Length: 407
Image 1 (tube, rainbow, N blue to C red):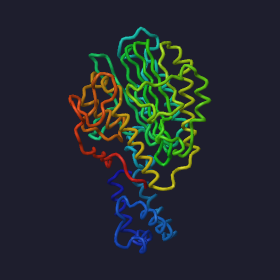
Image 2 (image 1 turned 120 degrees about the vertical axis):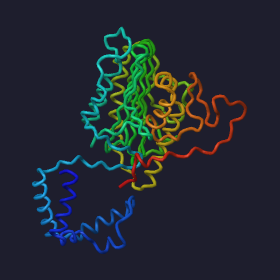
Image 3 (image 1 turned 90 degrees about the vertical axis):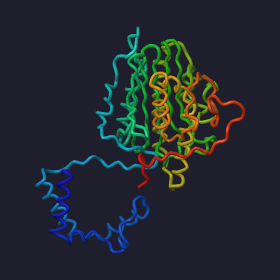
Image 4 (image 1 turned 90 degrees about the horizontal axis):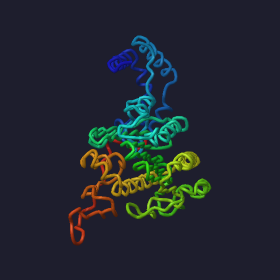
């Protein structure tokens, strides 16, 4: 039914049967006017009293009137499923799942860059497997917007001169508030597949982080981890390292140790992280791919086996830890320099702070686009010397346009 028809229909119902409209009024719950927007607790209690006060006969007559009106207006209207946004969730995309999955020609079959390989898109099979797994295993999976707070569409960008491109897909489900998938293709010079799975904040569980890189098809880097929200594993709703250890034990090639060049492995990394630097591409197919599958499946099992938080305070605490994770990751993203060289500093900064790690608190100094090395501490400008200048704490982001309170 079109919008104008709905307005006409409402007027007809009110005119023809005012008593039917009154059948839904609850003098006890609507005294003083309608509930304030966002007052979720009072709204829930009022909905209960409304349900209890509905006149059954009047409801039946009203349903008949609506059915007649819908028939006049062209038959039944099949509305899209309602998506309820809880804290930290982004607005759903108008695209269908099939439209989102094929956006920008995905999955790609050839590279934009130069390649001498028969499989130029090294990690595309992992992208395809992950998306198929999400479709078959997640509840109410749907695409969400790939944009910054300034409404900049970052779902795709390319540098034709340098023959590089990047594509981003974003999804959400009942289990996860956000699953981001990023593929960077520059031929044999660079191939990257990156994905982050954020559980809905009602689950006090680690984030699933995936970062797979190839340089010149000679050097490879892989990280797959249940990235903890808390320093102590016991502070999560369920412990998990014991279920990862048997998987990791199968793959000696994935038992490396991370350097401190970009990250501190004691923050937001678990003891059972899969980490590898290697120069034998066979490891991707023989070890990395099956281990990646096992970690993804195990993470979803962990979410499904965990009881959700019972209080809004607990949910807010988990979301605060997501914010801390995003801020830490954005400040230290080793790809910042690469993105800036290919797509410009302004685009890259918005992309990293407002999309890749969309809950992050932006540093007053901005991102550090200097050559690889230890991350610059907050409060130190690139050209600063002497002691760090004192700054007020950066203000948290306003996510009012992208999220809503729990309903």
